[in-house]
Length: 593
Image (cartoon, rainbow, N blue to C red; front, side, top):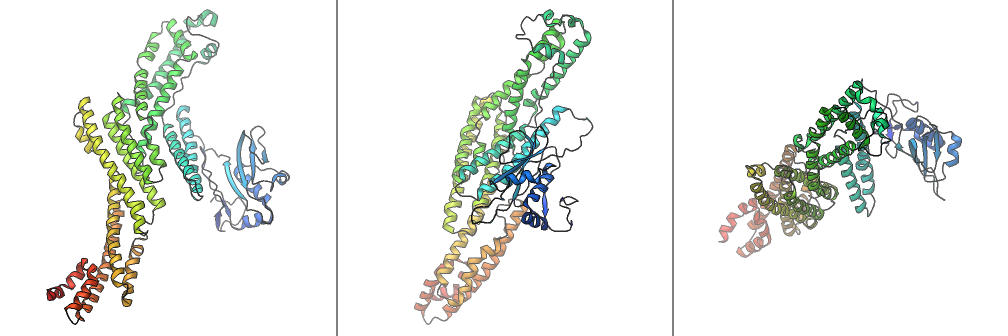
C-alpha cells in the first residue's frame, strides 16, 4: 500500500486485491502492487465502469484516454486494450494491441451475454509504466549495468511463468502437456537469467576508423592513400589512442578467457540450482567467446590492427594475437558445451509422475559416460554434476508428492502402495543400481587419466535424494504397521458394540496427529516434529492396547472351560502380535498348556 490512496479515499479503509493480481515487477523500477479500496471498486464499477478504467490507466500508465473514446469500444468485446502510443505519447484505446507501444494494460470483462448480467471488469498490466530508480554517480560502466537490466526482465518473466501461468493451467482439465511446456519454459528462463551474469565484451572501435572501415570490402592489401589514412601513419596521438584501445580489448577479453580455468563448480546448496548454473555457464561462455571471435574479424578491428602494424606498433597487435588465450578458451568451452549438450536436466523439471523421473534418471546415467569423448571436462566436475542432479531429483519427487499426494498418510492404503510406495521405490532402487555402475566406470576412467585418489572423490559425493528415501521408508513403516493394526482391530472388534470407540480411535489417529505435519520437511526441525508425532501416536496406541488387553482378560476370565478359552483365543488371535496383549494373557496360555 502506498502512503496515499490513488482514489483519494480514507486510507484507514480495508483494502483488497483486484480479481486478477497486478504483478508490476519491473526492471529498473520500484516494484508496486496496485490495491484498491473496498468501497471504491463497488461504487465505481457499479455506477461508472468507464471511470474505473480511467482511474486504473492513470495509475498504471500515467495517462488515460477520454471517456468518449472508451465508450466506442467498451462492452463490444471480451478484452479492451489501453496503451501509450510510441510516437505521440498519447493514451490510445482499441480491441487490438499494436506491435509498437510504450506501455499497456488490458481490461477483461464488461461485456454482457444475452440473458446474463455483465461480467465484472478485471485489469491486467501487460507492460506498465516504469519508475526508474535514481542512478548512482558513474561508478559502473555501461557493460556491467546492461546485464543487470536484462536479468531483471528475465526475472519478471519467470515470476509470471511460475506464479501466474502454471497455477492458472493447473485448475483446468487435460493440460498435462501444457504444464510440462510451461515448466520447460521456467527452466529455460532460469538458464538465461543465470547466463546474463557473465560479462559481455564489446570491442569499441575508434569512430574515425569505424567510418573508414564501413566502406572497405576486403582488409587484404589496404590502400592507405585511397582510404585517407596515409597521413595517420605518423600521427602519434591517433596511434597511441588506437594502441590504448587494443590494450583495453585485451583486458576485456581476458576477463572471459580466464573463466574456464578459474570458475569452480557452482555451490551445491538447498536453495541453489547448481546443475542449471553449470550448463548455463558453459553455454553462455561459448556464445560470448564466439562473439569476441566474430568481432575480431570485423572490418573495424581488422583495419585498426592493420594500421598499427603498418606504423610498426607491433606490441599491441602481437599481445592481442598471443596473450588473450582466446583460442584455447574457445577450445575448452566448445568441448565442454558439446559434452553438456542434451544433459537431461530439463526432464526432471518437467516430470509430473514417477515414471518420467525414472526415465530422466536413466538418461542421466546414459549421458555421463560421454565424458570419455571430452578432453577438458574433469571427472571430479562430472561427479559434482551428478551430485547437483540428485538434488534436482529430490526436488522433482517432492514436487510430485506435494502436488498430487499431499495426503499420503491418509489416502487408501492400496492406492498409497500402487501410486506412491512402489513407484518411489523403483526410482531409488534404479538409482542405486546405476550409481554402482557409474562408480565402476568412474574408477576405470580415473586410472586411464591417472587421477590420484578417485575413491575419495566418490566418497565426497553427497546423494541428496537419500534423506527423502529414508523419510519415505519411515512413512511406509508407519503406514504398514498402522494398516495391520487397523485390520486386526476391525476384524476382532466389529461385533463388540462397547468397543466401537477403539475402532474410531485407530481410524482417526493418523489424521488427528499428522494433519498439520509437513512430512517432506527433511530439516532437523522436521525430523524432530515427526519423531514427536510418532511418540504421540505410540502413546495413544499403547492406551488402546491396554484397553484391548483388559477386554481379552475379562473374556478369558469369564470362560467356563478350556474349550471356551480356545474359542476366545481363536477369535482374538490377531491381537496377540501386540506386546501388551500378549503379556496380559500369558497366564491363561500357561493354564491351557
